[in-house]
Amino acid sequence: MRGLAQAAAEALLAAREQRCRARGLGGCRAGLEHDDIERDMRFAFDDVDDLAHASGLDRRALEALAQAGALRSLAGHRAQAHWAVAGVQRLPELLADTRIDEAPTRLAPVGEAADLVADYQAIGIPMGRHPLALLRPQLERFRVSPAIELRDYPHNRLARASGLVTHRQRPSTAKGVVFVTLEDETGQVNVIVWPQIIERYRRALLGSRLMTVYGVWQRDDDTGEVCHLVARRIEDHSAMLGALATRSRDFR
Image 1 (cartoon, rainbow, N blue to C red):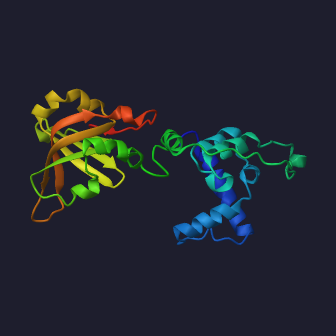
Image 2 (image 1 turned 135 degrees about the horizontal axis):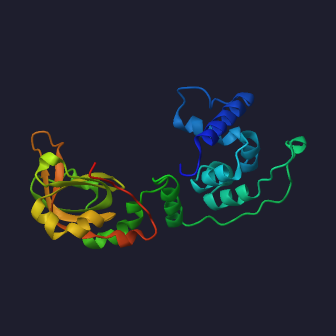
Image 3 (image 1 turned 120 degrees about the horizontal axis):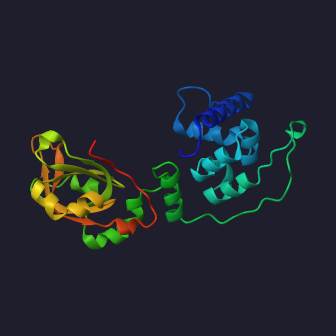
């Protein structure tokens, strides 16, 4: 989570554990199911102000939590969490347990696309739907197939795929071949780009954040598990991402 120091994270976890124990909740027990942990997290603190006073976090740490959507279960949504953080008052020690009683201000939630952009800015991954799920109606005009559908494609069938570029690799033993991993809302597609295709589509290959690949689907008929798309044409559709900032691990 960008902007949250390790000391602040540890202080928050300690405050949550202490509150869970005080309230007889199970959040500090091992082996809980995810839903149980979410339930206990939600009831460990009454609201954002309660969390701030119990943990002693400063404004910067609270804003990082709000930006990352980590206060959603207490505030309702990201915009409301930012408003709640702005209203946290640091009082003298003598008045540390005092709470300011005022009517809450209710803000409208931001749209799903704006929420997604904020997720990538704060933690680098989506906490809601994947970006390609939102873009799927626009991608339909390119007649691309989701990763989950490509898995059932037969060997040597023409195929098209679009996805966020997560990896670009060029092993020294691959004789100039580049391997690209695309990610959509259903899974990943491994792409093989031969040297002659690299030269023809170098800019799109190296610069795309959202890449569309036209090529031939290949699979190991014996196992059906080793599958990849051999690129014949590459297009850069990064403009469709707008303000969404994604990153890939390139040539490591």
